[in-house]
Image: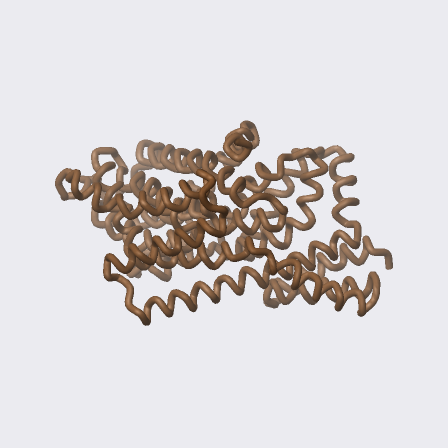
Length: 437
């Protein structure tokens, strides 16, 4: 059997193992080990897996993962997300469907200090959905807005998916963060336009009764300052320090985690047992991510050894579909995988094969990374997996809202994400101009 045939069988075996329920990282390690033994011998395979474990995880850069994860957990626990929503709720109260817009903008700001979509979904399902329900919005729309806007957490920096992509593609994490700013703003604006159009053309989808707006008075200047200072301080500390050249990504993560800890302590929202629990949770998430990265690195080297990415690039790019035909197939594959697999696993499975093809096609890998992240995030909103949707359902206290209602509410925002992908394909500079500075 030729190495190319082994590579093809390895991909088929990986998908079969995942579908029957084996953990992604274990499946990738097992398939890679067997494939290398088949192509070479067991001594090479064992040496290779040891080399991968050493090379893949000893990099100083990987310290950024637990630090940003811990920062996100601390920010979520300290109530900063609620303050962010409260501030935008008051500012947008005069607009029709203003609470929906407030949720989008609040999630965009919250994304700039957490970087985890699930954290956004958890916080805003408890904060925004009850408020929107109280003011006459349908449960379908309220949960759909939260689900849709939660994906901003993986696009607007800092972003865990951006870190993973940068590591796999061997790109600068700082540049990947910069590349997410423009597309994140565009996606937030497209989401806002979607809400405006729904409120005008599908009012029954948005409102159960006339939106009377919040019954609170105008927000005072003191309250704006009180609620916005922690958010702005963290954004300035992390992103200002990173882009101003004061911190590298790992140092920015450490500064952000420390800043989030100070905010939680000043608000007296964190006890010693709770802090220990957050540390354990951050460790659990970090180990899961790093194990997947190690397994993906082994899988990537196995694919390179088989020659499959090179042959696939020649086949796709020399054929009738061309570079943008490949891009369309890639996005479609990622979205379909999102039906059943989580975001990080999708990236670690497809990127070892897709990156060499994208590079041969002449695509900017930073722009390709932004496209990949948005396509992957669509899977958070689509059945049957829809991780953000199930997170919202779990966090909600409203038994009248079912999983199907949340999926229907998220559907317009899935469409908005496809529109954003189209905009980025037509205007790639949106993703690359900041990263090239």
